[in-house]
Length: 289
Image (cartoon, rainbow, N blue to C red):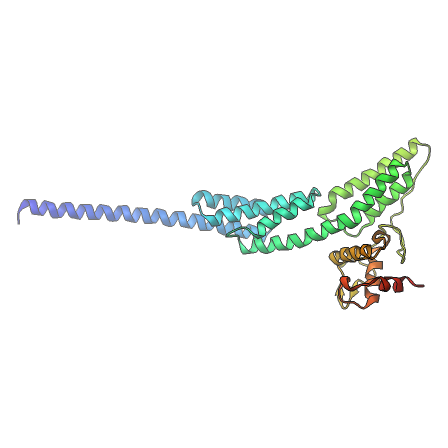
């Protein structure tokens, strides 16, 4: 065999060997990247299970740096959205929070568990918003009017009714709880400067025509609950209470003159399966002695 032929064969073999080494190295590197990416995504998912959205966002961001994918981007957007929605809700910005959580739910390529958690948060925030619009805000408006009229006792009473609400200790009402507490302190000080004094009553007994905002523990479930909160075998929650208030208003009644327990008792007395079915006659029948 000629020397040139031998060297040609050797050269081809070396090239083939070098190519194999390069291919093997590239494959090993690719496997390492994939493994690191998968680990970061899995860590993020575990954080979502714990509802630790700060950690989840960090892990999904790490995954995106290792390997840019629509999945990593979508998951991070969702985790960030949950953080933003929760922060807005805690600050009393319920509309903004609901808009943000909608984005979480409808994120393209979104993580199914984050979608589920977003849907649950949306339900909660809708109830919170209803409570604010139909109980908290009217009471604050009445307290402000009383303050403007220098009716300090009335203002304190309205603020105290806010603090008596069964859900006021929830994390999404903290801003308004603090506002009510400051309102009481400010009006006590104003009354003192005016040469008078005010008192606070932490609870009142609800009646069919109970004072505006007087709720006691009605509508609250679990430990500490009082009264019968069930209609047709199902517990009436804050969402239905809000619906009942809206229905009363549409029928010409003052919805804020009813405590949650009154609303539940009236609803039960009608025999209806949905608040929308309640008529003016149903309410009048309930109010009869």
